[in-house]
Image (cartoon, rainbow, N blue to C red; front, side, top):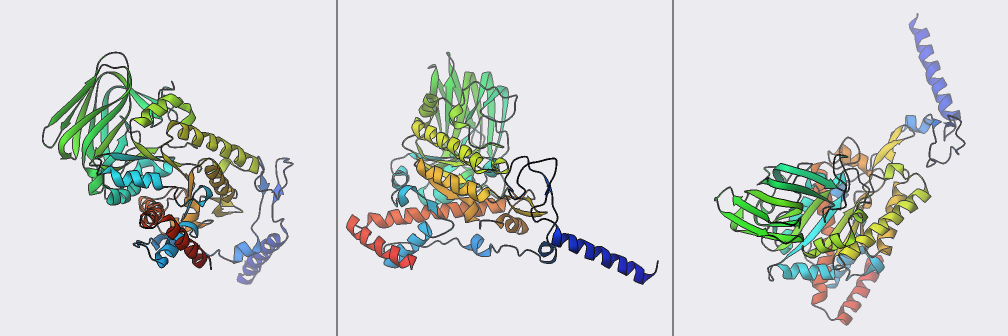
Length: 492
């Protein structure tokens, strides 16, 4: 075949494909006898034959610029001038990285901040329980929130850990042995589902003897604060009979013990004279272990409760009285609920979104009833990419899910923070992936990306704290006047 003939053939093929691009229906051709409207990209069970438009073929989509987002983490000292009030207002209410709080109440976090400030002086700990799906697994995001808040309010250690950790974390190593059976509201079908779960929404039953080794991780994400602990508090549900726990400091050989014969939910406290990085615990008895609070010093403790593949429906599986009794023993100051990502691929209609959000509202109400003293924060899902029209793009209904979850949280008295908006909104996950900050699944952050998200959340929360500090130095009338001026200036 002559070269000119071959060239004409390829040109003809290109011309034919270009013609198809021009005339092919934009929304595709329905397949399989579906009666769904091809224009409705959210219709369930809708399959269609699609072809890219000429514009999609010829024009490369510009990647979203996120440099300003991932680098814009201010650390200003807001101490009382009008300019600082304006900065605070812009951070709190005009930024994509802002918190949404019920009724725009600037005092929403006051109770939490007051407790956090007083914790060290009163020799107390204020716990933050961070529940979430696999986006926070391995102590990602939580570890950075823990580090940032402990820098401000004091505290140390990795927080509350399960007796057996199904997924290793980046901050702490643990290994359990003995006759141990898991009980969980989610996960592996071999788990026993009997309603006896505790505040981690799972527990571990042992009979006879069990042991647990704890040691600080050597990961680059395991900071000095999280690597040391001096206090071990075991939250349990004891069966009739004696329950004893002993802990040995592997560095010094020091040993501490505690025991009880009282059945039901309780707390056994073990305290070393000095902090260590490694210990071995031995359990004897017949009990359910709800969690082991591994802390150091006084101040803030942050517990990571990662639950792979869940959508946030597990809280009501824990009996209210059981959850309330457990929370009351742990000095809970804040509860973070981070869910939605696992439901996004299946929420293809407004009705489905409405149903999901109604269920989430019920979960928030259950948690609030169990822990009325806690400040509740709901974190919505990140941007997530799927194939739309042959290209990676944000799930079509994801922005609707985020806004609906925000409305639900506010209606049920919880604050709302949007990872989706904080990371740049639609199409941002693709940009995060290109910079090594998100994985190849275009759903999860890498450890580096998780650090940025943890910092961004902490910045937004600490902006409220700076405002709280500012308000302590002003009379209500002075603050109202200053804030009114800041509001007008910031909105101009």
